Length: 426
Image 1 (cartoon, one colour):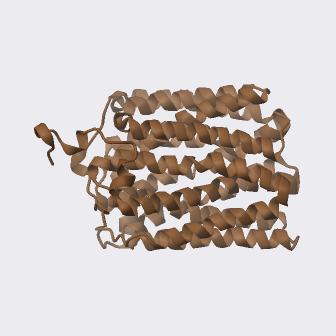
Image 2 (cartoon, rainbow, N blue to C red):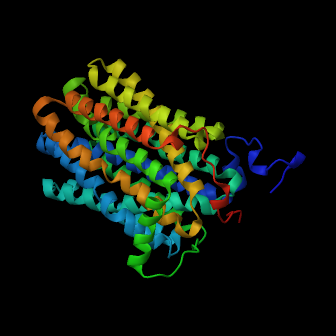
Image 3 (cartoon, one colour):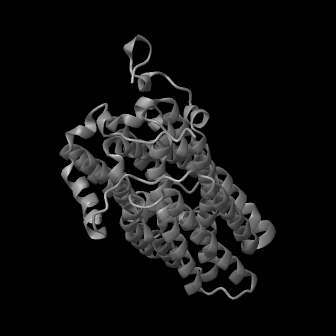
């Protein structure tokens, strides 16, 4: 594919909104990502606060986060096989219906004043299972709806759509709790989820070109592909460690807000919103600077800066300083995640894309494994110590991975030959 002067089209400079202007189907995916993640970030704040109000136990907050996140570990790989076989639009639609039903059920239980701790844990698990399929399917759909020249831009824009609601969702959830209680706040969350279902139904059908080998064989093929390709293995290792050892701080934010910073639900919402603002800035930066999204060197640098910002946040009891460090963590975390996603998308063929991306999403399932012990340590010795210990371990492990895989120190790992996508222009 050539442009003026014999240069590849994908090397031409494009605007930040190139994918949105060029691909109508991608605009729909962007829209449903906005509404889904508005609900998701509201849910993240509300379920943690509800767990704390219901039980007054940091451990129960951690347990709720564990059950909300563990489906990512259980569901991602089977979901990857399904989305390499079935209409990806339909899979996404069904998953979003499940998430909406879980939230509506919680609203009814709160309204009837019948909610018990075990019901909250069940709702967290069901919602988490649905979101695991949503995240996996949506990641695979990006490459089906845009061309090769727009992939890095599209991934960064989807990251922006995922992170922008981190500003609005928590900032809206806190005041909603104050004004209408948890029932009203969860009801608004459910409305966003219903809107997502409607937008998703308008997406075009996307039937992948994957093979029809037996389910178990296809399941194993995804794992074997990651294991045998050093580039994929290195990226998965670098995706695993922050999820396991750094991101658990997110589930402990209600504890930090109340016990360390002296804030209520509104203050917690502001903290999460500022963290989301940082993430939006990071995502937009990657959308504007395409080369960042394709650089393993940027990946390693930003994940280390992300760790430093979270460590600094855990040390302070001053609200404005905590907010500043959370904003920086949001920037660095977003660049790190968008870069990881782009490099993975560029490294795989479409017929196995769902399974490889499901392995990546599987690493997100390790979050509750880090959250549960973090909650237990926080219960006995405080949240700052719990987060600090995990971050130190993360930095040591990330350094070891960077030494083990020299390719992570390169400026680019682009592999155009592996990219295959439908353009989704109609």
